[in-house]
Image 1 (tube, helix red, strand yellow):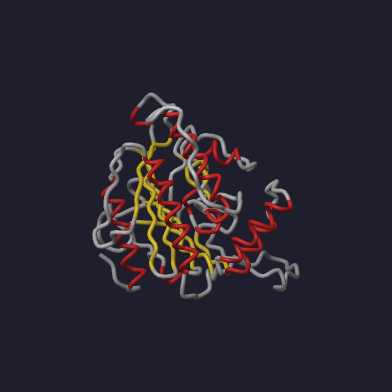
Image 2 (cartoon, one colour):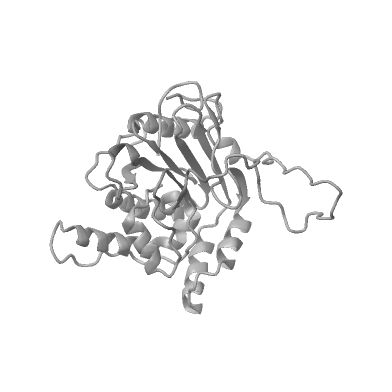
Length: 313
């Protein structure tokens, strides 16, 4: 498999098996149906201000239900910032039904001129900005993939707009919970979010990368929290290490566990790394055979590109 820069291999915020869906339900947020076929993750939309995360007491050490309860406690405690800070809690969508023909989009201010014309105006491309320039460019082996959310498959959203979107969302939170959430979100000092999805033309694999730029100290706290989620959701599978980036964390999981046929399962790798004031959330998934090492290589390529745009492994 070729990477989006001229080299083969590379990957990655957090797969969502049954425990994650259960956790989202526990916070009052609607959870998507479990995917029956290849499924593409979409950004979660259920903020809830995190306090200090504590895992519930396990009835029996090592029991599957005990691990599930700990996962629920962690996810429920940090959903609010997770919504903002990246793909660790991206919900699963249907890969087969994803619209890969959607044009590249970015958020247009409501004050923009919206006078009707005789013919539809073309969808604008992403305007030049520093954060989008740090996303891994498309190579000849990739095309834009499924939409990540309502913004499309290649977009930039300002920090102010992203915060307001989360605050305006109908999440079923009480007034006190909303106040706590808003305080936590304001503390992020969010500067912007840029994201892009990539569809590999030959292997039918999808890669998703999201960059969140915010206050480094706030992102560091979230990063530690989300890495714990990655550890819990990854189970016993050994995920690749990212050479040169000791603080990067990856996790492997499988979508479609209810299927008996091994070839019908969808392998997923989720990775995360914090580089200065930018949190990198990476996910790649596809049908078997799926090379986690190749995916990890792509994640490393993104991290190198973040440090030196224009350069890659």
